[in-house]
Length: 297
Length: 274
Image 1 (cartoon, rainbow over the protein chains, first blue to last red):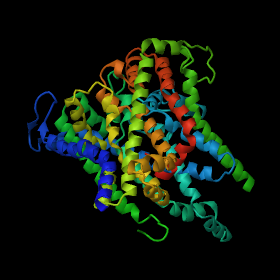
Image 2 (image 1 turned 180 degrees about the vertical axis):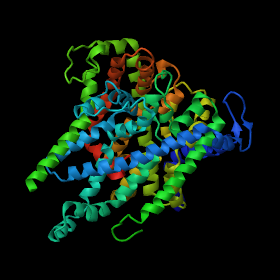
Image 3 (image 1 turned 120 degrees about the vertical axis):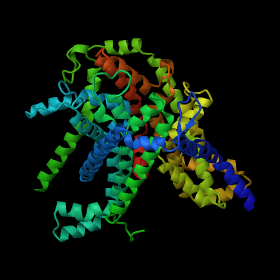
C-alpha cells in the first residue's frame, strides 16, 4: 500500500524531477565548471582556474555595471513601494468605481517590456517627448532623459513606475485584510489620518510590504529588457549607453555577443552571491519591523 | 472637511488614471499619424492615415511573427499548466517519504537567478542543434515550473479529501482521480496559470534574443526590437513604424487582460504575482 502510493506520487512528480536534473542541477554544476574555463562554444573549454574571477575585479565594466544596477535599484525599489502604497490607499478609500480605477492602474502591466523600452525613448525624448511637454506647461525645462547619462536611470525608474499596477493589486488585497475595529477604536481616540496610516495600516500590512521589498529588489538587480531595448542592440549608434549598462545586460553581452561563456558564467555566480547577500541583509534588517498577527514566527 | 477630502481623493484617482492610460492613447494615436506629425502630441491625429499599418505589414513578416508567437505561447502555457498541475497534485495528495525536503527543493529553485543556468541551458539546446528554432522557447515547460507548482499545490491542499477517497473506493485509478475530479475542482488556479504563462511567453524578449537568429523565426517582441534597431535609431528615424508595431505587439495582451481580468487580479492578489 505504502509502496504503491510512493510509486504513484513519483510518477506524478517525475516531470519536475527530470526537468530539475536536466535544466537546473546539471546547469548549476556545468556553470560552476565553465566559470573556471575559457569557452567560446566552438573550441573545447580551456581550464584556467580562478582567472575569470580575478578578471571580474579588474574589469572596469563590472564595477560600472554593478554601480549602475545598485543605483537603479536604490532609486527604483523605494519609489515603487511608496507609489504603490499611495495608490492602494487611494483605491481603498473609495467604494464606488474602485474596480474601474484598479483596472486603469493595472493595465500598463500587460504591456510587453520591449514596448515599454520603446515608449521610454519616445515619451522621455528630450526635445519632443510627452514628459518634457508636460513639464513645459509648468515652465520646467525638462532634461534630456534618454541621452544625458545623469538622467537615464531616473527616466528608467519613472518609466517603470508605469507598471506598479501589480504591486497596487497586492497591497490593496492586504489593506482589505486589516480589521475595521482597529480603525474604529483609533477614531474614538481621535487619531488623524496620518497617525492611523502610520500606526495601524503600515504595521498591519508590513508582511506584504516586506515581501514586495524583497521581490522588487531581486527583480531590480536583474533588470534587463527595458534598458536593453532602449539603449542596446544592433542599431544603436546614437545613444551613449554606459549609464544604462545594467549587470544583466553586461552578462548577456559577454555570453551571447562576445561568446565569452566562461567569463559570463563567473559573472553569473557573482550576481548570485550579490543577490543572496543583499537579500540576507534586507531580511535581517527589516525583519524587526515586520509585524505578524499572532506573534513573530 | 469630509467632503473636501472626498473631492481630493477622487481628483487624485482621476489624475492617476489619466497618467496611466494616456501613454496608450498617445501611442495608439501616433500610429495613425504621418511621420511628420508623430510627436505633435495631439490626441486626435490632424492627418488620419492607415499607411503605417500597411507599411509595417510590408516591411516586416508580421503575420509570420504573430504565428510564431502564438505557437510558442500556446505550447508554453498548455505544457506548463498540465505538468505543473501533475507535480502539484503529486505533492498535495500523496504521502511518501522525502516529500517535505523534495518540495523544499522545488521552492529553493525559485531563489536561483536565471542567469546561473542560462548559459549551460543554451549549451544543451546548442548541442541538440535546436538553436535557431522555436523549441527552446517553450520545451522546458514540459517539466513544470516551480512557481506554478507552488500555486497549484496551495489550491489542491485547500480541497476536501472526501471526493477523492470516495472515487478511490469506487475503483477509480490515480490518473482518473486527478483528471476527472482534482483538475476540474481546481479550475480557477488552472486558468490563472494559463493566463500568467501566456503573458510571460508572449512578452519575453531575452530568450528570443538568445535563441532566434533568422527573422523568419522571430516572435513579435523580438521582431519589434529588430524594427526598433532598423527604423528607430538605426539611422532611418521612422518612429511611426516602430510605434505602430508596438501597438500591434501590445493589443493581444490588452485583449487577454479583459478576457481574464477577474482571474488576473485574483491570481496576483493571492500569490504576489510572478
